[in-house]
Image 1 (cartoon, rainbow, N blue to C red):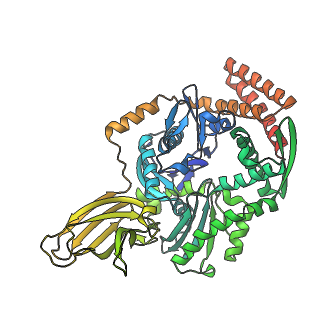
Image 2 (tube, rainbow, N blue to C red):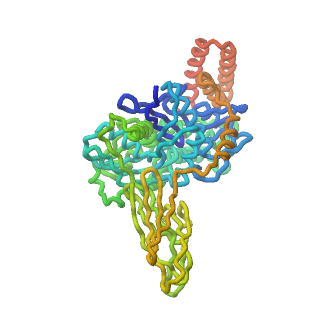
Image 3 (spheres, rainbow, N blue to C red):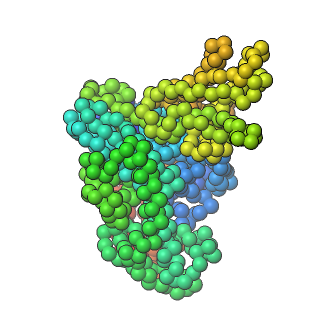
Length: 567
């Protein structure tokens, strides 16, 4: 079987993979039969654990388990995992490799070419790190697609003939994006994108964890990492509970005492007000950029698991005066849309009459200096040439002049961002242009920027005095890994062994038992210990039928224990 178009949602909290098959996108289950694979990595005796089993170890093996590393993409962070340190891109590559393995086994073919989604408000360094993660995972990245755009494709592919203007609100585990799109005559055009790369469902979970902390009268900043992790685990379950019910009770052990803490939906909403206010800023920026009013929008789509929270749905409905839609599972929409984008690139016949356009989420321009009234010069200023939310591909020209008639060269430094100061923006590249020596006046010159949908940026400076052109190609999605450096990093990562797929379900249950054992006390802890002994014993017998039976019984008992602690 040849490879179908593949899309991957590389998420902060969970990741998914989908394939475009028989004219429609479909999700691919992992070894546990689930579509969501937690974006968590753990090390156990030199063995790599990715997904649900790793997430269970967050509580019991904090020094060997890591999550939320997507928030560090594009930084120089080195994250300690056991005895080794890894970059966020390397950790993300472990998740991508796991998704690739699941897809290959499910589809029965080798997977190489993929489309991967990223938050619309990821800057170029973060996008570059995502491309690096794909390379380390042995994947050929066809394109990065913005998450709200992918979600819109998941919806829009079913309504090719619609004429509608809609807004996508995408709140995932670690990032928030908002995008305005228009659908007409089979063309889906992105009009504007904005967001917050450091705001997500995990921040709402922390609000609940701190509310639990307040109710047991313990200062959050003085808690140890282990206790904070326990409270976050309780808060995550409670967040789901009070999305469906008005209140829930959390049982917390502290200093040999057990506290029953009642959490209510109204208290949660009150504590999360600052986060909801942060969400309104990108929404209003998007509406401003395209000069729209609420009544101009036909539909509002909610994407991302965190949009299940009633407070968020209420906020969106109140702000826009209309109820949002969530016809597609908010956890699934981005992955489904990513495979639709892959199918568009592959020119799948099922999508012959669908055209997709996108915009630049950030402004792109150059560094300039200015002479102020008293003759002083101010440098380090940013002059946009391609404004944010310009449809791509785009070609724009800016006109400039040197500050000094005797100036012999000019440095063209290209940046991406929205700050007036280049120091607060992202540098994309630079080059020096030599100026003609024999001239009496300041040199005038034009800078042309050509930005295409693949992320390639061409810069060309034309001198006014001579007409000479000096250019630079910035491969914004390229990674500067030499073949030697790539081989070195791959060799380092190969020392970690991935468990056989058939062991993954059992491995996940062992990790869950360990987590619940660490969380419980007294008779409950003894019951869990009995379960651990029973399961280890049946694993030694290697009878798959008996293993499945015991595993099912244990999972039911663990569910009851979890329900006891958050009810």
